[in-house]
Image (cartoon, rainbow, N blue to C red; front, side, top):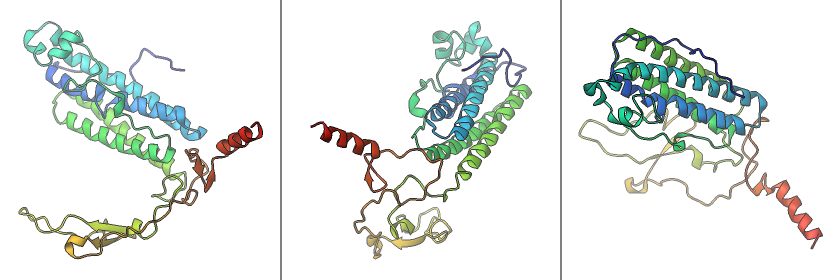
Length: 283
């Protein structure tokens, strides 16, 4: 159940309206990394979540993002106010002025319509939490860039509030993922191919005009990884010997989402097996 309270989570005040900046702010209203996308992503994930504790987390943050959307909307409307009556201001965004009457609409800063394609919802709790951590990071950097394009104190303070909450949410999602007590790269139920999973292919070779060259670092020669050269460079390349997938071999958590598929944990899905036996008995 949602209940609207007629009070912004953060009170917004601005000095001089700036319609062009108002258009920039639309990125966080109807854009790919905006507050509506975040609210919908976390809420839908929460509806799908089978773990009550982390479901509560997802619904908490999803609901807060709706409050953030309201703050962004109020800020945008203040900056767009001149477009209702001033021709020059209206030229800053004719779409908002003519189609939307000078108010907010589900478009980004370039006039692209909001779409559910922005949402990352896989139905796997660990995967979704990782997506959310990345989403908060993207939103944080967008707010930071918006701050850098205004000198209005009230606008900057409101954006600072919103930017800060992105980091709070990152911390919450990270803690929720860590509390599942899974190895950091344990995804799903099928263990990756041994040996192959530790190979880093050196697929960008030679030296570039700008000084770029092959580099050795912890991403290719550390953390259990080792570099292999491609056949083009005279190396052996990746190990590509066939290896049968083995459901049920990956390390999981008691709060993981239910696996999806007719064949899991090395056997037919219990419900499918029972249905097959029932059909056989009535044949």
